[in-house]
Image (cartoon, rainbow, N blue to C red; front, side, top):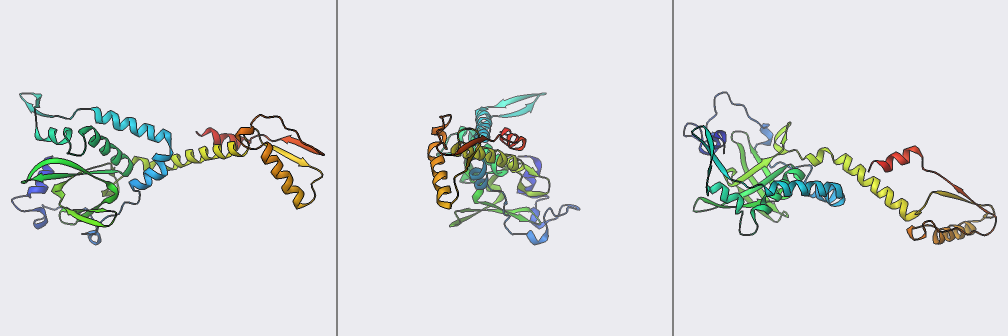
Length: 279
């Protein structure tokens, strides 16, 4: 906790910030937002369902990042006599590494990385017993709403699980870290949101390949049936071609056509090749 955070909790000059303006301090939020919960347009549910769960490259990258960070041990040092010295068994170290009764410190740090990268913000409740912090419990971003305060920056956090249960948490009860949004101090800017267009393009390229494989399994061709004159003839010819040629199980098999028929190969255009190569 830095000096500003300590001042925010204890107040300046013995008075809470909400009761005393500091010098020429200006508000960080518009007056109409004072006390109103802020909604995140890009949520962790959107990030998971539309991007991470459907894209193997993105999932692999985020998992490796989360695992690498979670493996780094957390401990506290203090600066004494010109050098940093580790403080053994510091309460902050125990909070992070021992996590809570439900998960290990490794899992807690992984969740923090996932939440921060997917939703832009990560939240943890500081669970206290007798006013002493005992452990950290993750708060899932999709259920957290930040409530701003014009005088005190933060009024509270609302935590609603599925909209059915709401708990109001004081700012001092929540550890909050985020990727800063340059346009709004109350929102976290998800790195995934910034590249969501590229992720969706890759998903469409994969869908293109899957549909192409299911429909043909080989090069595009045009079947010219000179004796097909009625709608019934056309439907019969189409079903015959689909049954004998289309699909991955029929890829590269020889074609045997009866009647006055011609098969003419059609090649991918440069635009189609560029689209597939985006993967």
